[in-house]
Image 1 (cartoon, one colour):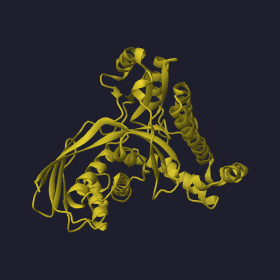
Image 2: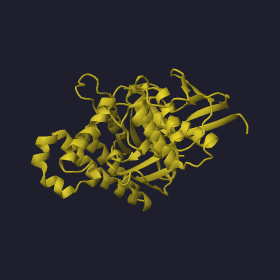
Image 3: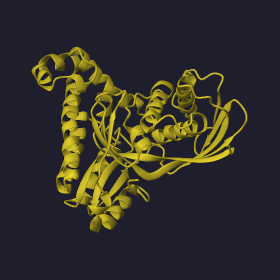
Image 4: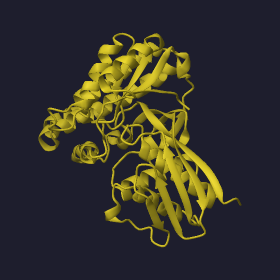
Length: 369
């Protein structure tokens, strides 16, 4: 076997389904033409050494892959977590050096962490596990590393979209075995271009804001004897509103309403795409964005009055688009990016308008891969 290898893993966009994955709901997501890349060399030791541009190097001893609290929120935590998950599955991991570069910008909302996790998973799966883990299993390993080792309570959507590739519908009703279906739609043929717009705020220090969403929903669900919104009867939920408001709080109730509605929107949008009704799909993009702002409340971090970068970015995009597209908060929210569908003939003016206000390079034109 050669001792030198090359691996890649793409970033992702969440087309529809904002914060539904951790509630065992439905998501429409896609892998994009921005990616993490690794040059890998076997080093003949029992250590994994990863150098990643812009981050401190990680040096992991394979003799001890237990969780280390001091590594939380670090590259080392993700490497250690992915390696530990493969070792538990029986992988005979040997030492390697990986030099990682990425066009999935950190803090951009395009899931640089998921791309990195999938990248590490693909390396170990190919070199030390005979490719026995399929794409969904690699995604689960990435989620495990991020939840348990890195310390971020993310769902499984980011990793699945990156690992599977293309435009995919994911039903997380059974989180241990999500249903993944490729959606046969070519966005390049619809007359619109997919863009992300950087809000100018970094989401790296917003873990508490993200964690509050599943945390509040868990509190609400447990009042009803359930763990996630998927298992809550919607009619019973509405009949219990007085109790739920008092026990879980209004924000938790509003967030639950968003999840119920958002799951229906995802299914409606997939049906619209399958039947060539792109205008209907775009209408629901806007409705999803408004629901995320009003009900899910993941546009502006709590207490931020002076800096409201995401709210401003979305408002700017709406004014520039007019009737020529749709826009919504993207991914976890609070910072990072918003997602826009821009009519092709309006694209040049849109990009120029965004970058005049938010700065050169703030608008990224993307393609699904």
